Length: 108
Image (tube, rainbow, N blue to C red):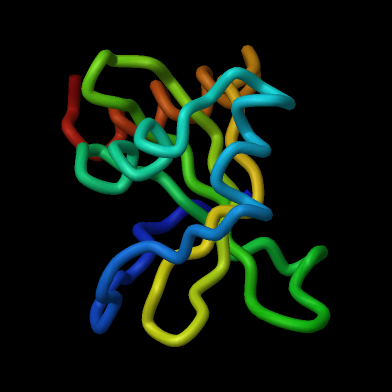
């Protein structure tokens, strides 16, 4: 797995509508604002989701909310805005990847 920091240069905000704002709450009990919080806290570990990038580039990131909740977030960037496709709690494998990446990056 190739892990790198996703660049957000030129991104101007988030793209929410009635179709995606509450779907992560109903499916995974993740609020829309928790999805946004992940992008404002470091470290953020991500990768290009090449398998699901047929029509548009998709990315997956692992990160933490303001309340230290570990989330896995899949998103795309449309018209300079982050559009969340899915967000859920990290599973055990993802938590391990996240922690190992932090250790590699920080030496701790």
